[in-house]
Amino acid sequence: RGRTIIFTDTKADANALAVDPKLNVDAKPLHGDISQDQRERTLQAFRNGSLRCIVATDVAARGLDIKGVDLVVQFSPPAKNFSGKADVETYVHRSGRTGRAGTKGVCITLYTTRQESIIQDIERTTKNTFRRIGAPQPKDLVRVSAEEAREQLATVHDAVLDSFKPSAAAVLKETAPEEALARALAVISGYTDKMQPRSLLSASDGFVTALYDAGTECRALSYLWNGLRRELSNDAVEAVRGMTMTADSMGCAFDLPVEFAKELEVASQQVGSRIKIADKLPPLKQQEGRPAYSGGGRGGRGGRGGRGGSRGGYRGGGR
Image 1 (cartoon, rainbow, N blue to C red):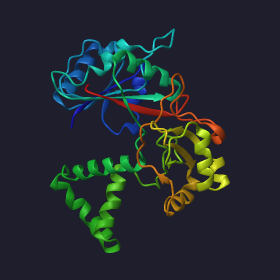
Image 2 (image 1 turned 120 degrees about the vertical axis):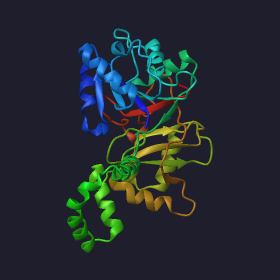
Image 3 (image 1 turned 120 degrees about the horizontal axis):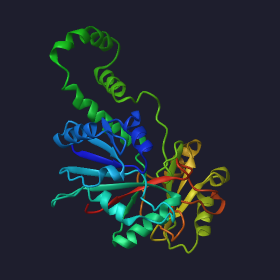
Image 4 (image 1 turned 90 degrees about the vertical axis):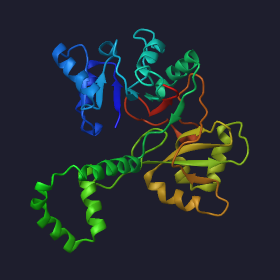
């Protein structure tokens, strides 16, 4: 289990994120309002591995030299206060907290569609090409949580087992062993409700992302809209959101509300179908000065994720 530093722009964000139950990991904030004594205790716990995650502002993280940081997460791409342009120096400082002393590390930056131009500025200045990835799907989060819950089973002291054995025996009389254990792991992981699909494009819950392969290079989105009309019902086409052309101009990715998921599934199974439900995004066209996942044609606006637009991410390479 490695160490993670999450960077936020404000002290309020650091405080809120550190105690957010969705973070699902023990984390401590690190910013200018934290007392020196508490700061030292937090850093010592982070160094010795008893604390796996800190949520820090840039000022608090200046001068930190901690080995073994595997992951840096930037809650948003750093921008200068007045101009709104990319703060490349801050980005480099943040990402440099991982991949130190010849080791490998990963830097992930979350961003909204309105911040795409900042990402492009950082790419140009650092001469790096970042890999855009969609938000994790609920099934991915559940899979990781289930694995962590399975590992937690080994930490239970033998002395407490007798208190749970009568209830366990009662459950096994009513339920098959595998199902009973699966239900227990679901409760431990905190996933007991039916999962809603999540858009790979915008991270909006209740949307399914699909891919359309035109089979030929398309010069404009209008070609792709015409193709969708041949594959889907009028109602489904009207509901399309966030159509984005693939980088090779051979197709597109788009979102549909979950109520059209069955239609998508049926369409994708037809012989000769050019549509399939996406489990990951292909490289998409990044248009200069324009959100990467904005809508087009009759698709309306792009995803309306938190903080002013769809939220995606990229993984920096090498650091």
